[in-house]
Length: 101
Length: 395
Ligand code: SF4
Image 1: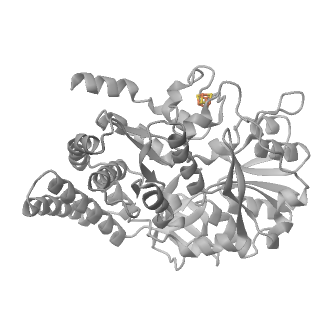
Image 2: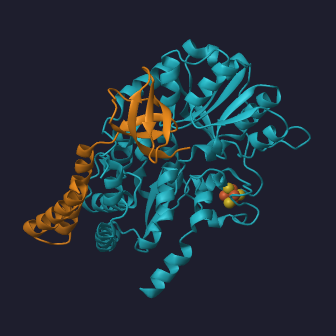
Image 3: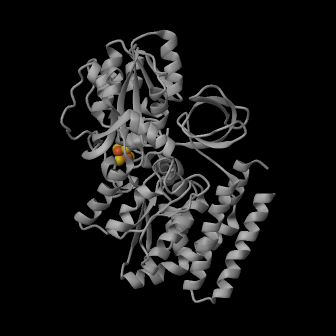
């Protein structure tokens, strides 16, 4: 029951209920647990309620976190600032390529 | 490509990144062990879904030998006290329509009814009771409206499930014939309980915590700040793909190395905000209040549950039906070590009943019932014990 899945909002049915597409054409009525949701938004659905939105900006922030992590480890391992940054940048560029693809 | 597919490509099917993070973990682990003079670095997850990712993708086999990933108390089905299930079974046998989630259906109880034949909601239905499995609270609300019959919803879950109940109560959508039996639990008090237990029992202390991603989408990464602030333990809220969990482990090692343990790291930025979903928090607070709650096999943890506020007492099954809370009594079936498993003290394979008297098809204890129960996860995907051994032999 604790499984959250991504879905796309299809319609807003009422002040508390939305219809979402869970993929493969499975449409479900779910409760709206976030502010300001509209058709076309990607959301996470958990036990029949929208718990948050899933956004591209958020994905980029997520990738930045990992890039910074890579940079830090390289630094701790004794790489120069420059080299560490290059490793992080390289990862980030590759990731963005996937994201834009 | 659609966003969820891109997320899969980045965080799931991304072997190159998994390899490079794993390499970094292998480089950092020995330095951290040496610096802290700790032979084993124990990292606890909270969420059953994190345990699923860890086991399903064999992440334990990717770890250096010094790093131990242990499951925590984050499976609501596993920790729902037997007394709550028993009370709901009794209501079903008395003629109430009972609505429940699918994985609560098979949950075995300690006390049995009807000459010992009924020890789960599934058995209650087999004996003629009206027990209905629903996907969500909305489905129960609609069905109860349609039937008009006296009904009870068995409300289990963590902070992630609470908004699904709260918004419908708050907006007045729940019909009067549908009562609510709350077994809702709060995650942070239980995680703190588990970490303290490791300390007080003189076990290898928990060195890092992987906070639950979806729970944190509601309560915010900020809710885990007590780990770094009060316990000096790094915490990181991660998502549910293998890359997320690997990145979480790496972050914990970095924090242990630098000693900069001040606030919770937030990896799962594509979904979680540092302060959480304030809309949902407000809805939950309007409808529910914190109460002491029983965790199965563990006992009462103060202020670790939620029940309906007085304004909603007309819906409160306990109050309306005069159900008295019994003091907690040990409530696991004989031989079951589910409490130790949920507290990260034992692995499922330490239980002599694992895959013998207790299997996913015939669960003996509560950790074998739900897809997020550690025993059920290990039963389905293997313990990785064997593969870990093989990998270390090859190395
Ligand atoms: S294997 Fe079954 S009996 Fe053993 S701890 Fe897990 S749930 Fe309990």
